[in-house]
Length: 415
Ligand SMILES: Cc1ncc(COP(=O)(O)O)c(C=O)c1O
Image (cartoon, rainbow, N blue to C red):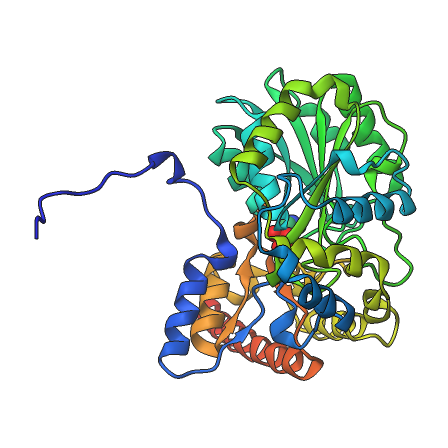
């Protein structure tokens, strides 16, 4: 064997990361291999927690499997694209049309494609902080620069529009919003969305709106698709089956192009080229889309008072905020809490220090806020998909760990 060679690789990826399956996740796998149980509150994957896709969706895939053997059109099968268009029209996006809907292997693939089609080296994209980290990584991967704007905890994590405006430069190409938000659970106010559209229109920017959690809203919160508001700019709206329909493994997602499409013909050509080069999205997954969008919407029961997600969100919120030194804005949507921890009280260095100690000492896995490009290092994200009993066990573990650190810290300070 020739050991003299080292194979070279793409160094532009050196600074990219995806913390949800990053080093702390690897550490958890090591602990599991040693024979320990780890409470996993790190990933928004509904199926392992007993959230099943509907029987109609399973039947749709089973009955169409034989006709799903070949590649489909690169934009996706017509019946699925029509179902997405109708679904968007019903939620207020009047101009949604099947000819401008692209199906992908989940929203993830479509985010990567968008950035590749849009960015030249050094182009800037305004990305929320904190964000779902694929957005930042996708900008970097395409040679662009993610410029983070503030989502303000003091205003229920709504985007700070003044901060966005102050960060627009002549290299800015697009504004990303995630609504409902991962990781903060925010659901954006209509007036904020309108201001973002006005900014985009004034500066000729594209709006990229990740609305994958659009049906997961609690306690009367209302989600407004940004594309449903008045605008004359290009809006890309991303959605899919992974969360609202519990089908993350089916890898079925879409992006809808609405608004000023005619001014973006070169960009649309790039999208067309990228879509055709990857041939098509997973076809069995595409055939599930009409059944999901036109069938019974089980998600409404999960998020209503008494529903499983609603109760788990409340339990997690109450248990965590009862721990001295933890504060949290109550989520209005999505599947996550994004609490703040008083590091000084516990003598902890930062969010990673906390997350690693919690994993090593209590076998509880969560993701530190810095993994979501948060501007401080005092937050962490908790997934509330597990049953309340498991959430309770996790909260007890966290409370015990922090009490221990609080006492140790007091003793150290007293010395
Ligand atoms: C905000 C957000 N966008 C996109 C995705 C990826 O979704 P998909 O499974 O459709 O690739 C996730 C997954 O957690 C997410 O939270």
